Length: 118
Image (cartoon, rainbow, N blue to C red; front, side):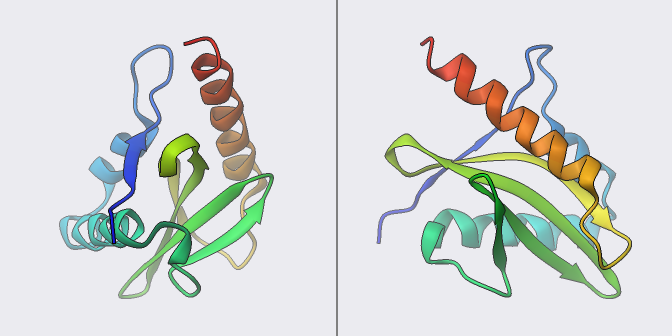
């Protein structure tokens, strides 16, 4: 099976939200998150719950659990089996933070807008 291509969304100012998120994680949690990203790269749409879950508007969440910590990384699929990873957060309650989902939607819209002009 051919690996998918993971692309880290980059804001127009050059910042990469997922890099910022991964950098703030404790080392062992970061290693677990990177392993989850490898699984996503390998399996793409074939990766299912509990590792990933469809949220809405084409956005999925990669679900990472390390000890008692739970984190999520949002992503969406793009042309030619590319996976665009947008932003991540530490989950502190059962409810998905609307602010984080809204940020993922904004990043997706920005990416699509910029890529449609290339």
